[in-house]
Every structure is written in structure tokens, then in C-alpha cells.
Length: 110
Image 1 (cartoon, rainbow, N blue to C red):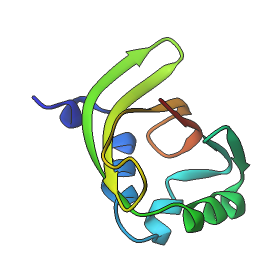
Image 2: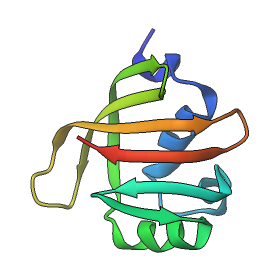
Image 3: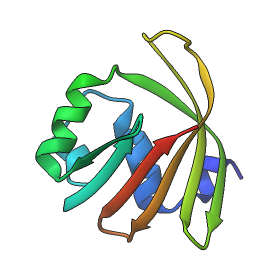
């Protein structure tokens, strides 16, 4: 069983869609008042999450670990794309509030 297979369904779906050009399916993963934190900047709500996505390069993801913790699910990845330092190993996606229908809180940091 791979790390990707043991991640909850909504998290697997996040990584399936995140490496593709933006689509409504990707944004539908988030609650209307969701929070995404990336590079120490917080984006609150779908409109802000759309702006964030427009500003980041498209990357591919290799999931290297999935860890369920009391604070949520932490997915460790290697990302590859058109950005300085690519590929980057050890980037962590911390899904701290989600269920099978929506993601409320996602924090991205090494």
C-alpha cells in the first residue's frame, strides 16, 4: 500500500486536482470559509484561495508520507515544477480540519 492509498479520500482528491490547472472541482474541495496558509501568508475564503492559486506555479506532487495525528493529517511531499529549488522534498501539507465533504484548514510549510 502506498502513502497515497492510505490518505483519506478528500486528501487524495486534493492532490489529484492540485497538480492540474485550476478547476471548479479543485475549489469545491474547500469550505466557503476555508483557510489556506502558504509561505506564512493566510488566505481565507474561496476568493482568497483562488487568488493564491493564480500566484503559485503548477507543480507535480509525490506523496512520501501520510501521518494521522491528533491535530489532523500531515502529508509529506516532494514537489517538482518551474520554481527555484525544484524539486523540493519534505514539504508538509497539514490538513487540520476536514471531513469527507470539505477542507476547512490547510497549512503548507516544510
